[in-house]
Length: 334
Image 1 (cartoon, helix red, strand yellow):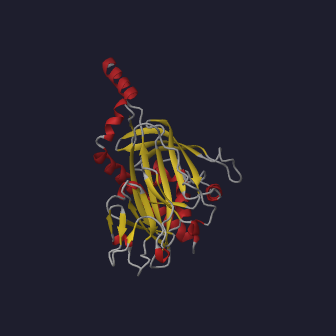
Image 2 (spheres, helix red, strand yellow):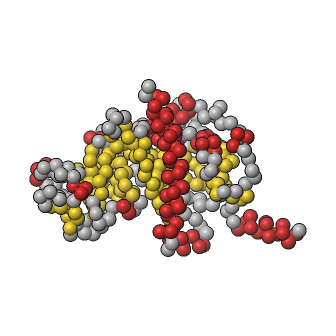
């Protein structure tokens, strides 16, 4: 027995996993008394008061390669492509000649060629009134600055959350919901729903601290959460903080436990109205994982095998969370 106990103690010390006891979903501690609507709404209002510089993420960096990529932000159709040096170019997707969709064009020697009549766009201002938009590639996400959509004082670069140093693995997920960015951000400012709404992913969730309603300093404006990430009957306990660095972004950062420093960036990018006249919002979530374990760097060599699982997990969560965000939009827009 002592030998088994020693083996168990060594495994607990060396492994981030813990065996989770069985707990029926309905036996969890209710959290509705803590998840006060006023507290969540005030946290959302504080997030909306922060500047964005009119920057909007619209795609994962690695999805823009040899072919042009189309996107819509705030009702504006965009096209993005790479120059000869791999630099990102973004501009209006409507050809200035006769309105062709430039995202269906071809990239040749770093220039975008319109498929209708061969007009070449090199990422510089062109006749007919076409001009490129400010763009930024942070290595994980591609951003465009749309001053008319944002309506704020523009900044030279987007507000990019602090990401972990050292070796990382990252994966980006994109889903679209019938709601507005506020509804997506409000979902993330309600950590109390995690273990109830996502029991397949979270267990033992406890909100250790939350900012009060009303005026709060930016330093105090965070949610601190103890949670166990579930993988079947095993779990990885961590402590994470949730902060809103700008109006359309929520960052979850692991501050203690396995993967400390890893971040999950949830960006809510407005697309514009759909055919039914209701708003559409793209949830663009970037998971940037890090670990101090010596063999973590090996994961970069097999990233193409790992990142699909990271995207699958994020997609499963956001299919549920979009139901939350869409329901919130429906209720408040009646």
